[in-house]
Image (cartoon, rainbow, N blue to C red; front, side, top):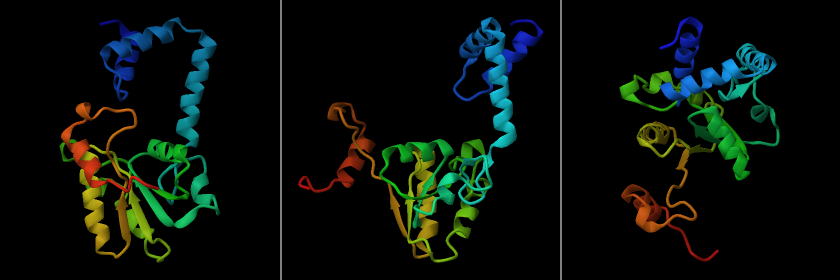
Length: 199
C-alpha cells in the first residue's frame, strides 16, 4: 500500500480490464518515472477520446461522427450484416479483407453471471435494421466461448422466425496447430464444418 495519489492511481489502473494488482503497480511507477510531456499527451489522448468518440447510430461501432465510416461507405453491401460483440471485432474482421458488407456491434455477449441478458445488448437495434427488407443474410461472428455461443444461439433462434438467412462463422483447427492439442469441442466443430478437399 502506498500513500494518497500513488495508491489512487494504482487502484484506478487496476480497474482496467486485464490489469491485475502487479501490472497496475508497474504502470503507476512507469507513469511516475516517465517524461511529463509524454504523460500530458497520454492524458490529452484519453480526454479527447472521451469527448469526441461516440457510437455509430446505425451499427454501434465507435465513430467520431453520428455514423461510422463503414455505414457511410456506399460501396459496402447493405444486404449482409455481420454481427459482432465489440468494436474491436470489427477491426479483426476488416483485417481479413474477406467481408464487404455492414456490421452490427452488440456491445457484449449474453452472460447471466455478470447480469448481462439480451435486453442489455443492442439486439432491438438489430431488429430495427431488418424492417426494410434490404437485409438478406445475417452472419453471426460472436466469440467461440460460452457467452458467445449463448448469444449466437439466442440470435439464430430469434432471427429464424423472421425468415432471414442466418449463418455462423466456421470454427475449427488453427493453421499450424496439432490435432493432439485440440480440445474435443474444437475438433468436433472442425469435423462439422469440413468442406471439399479439392477447390
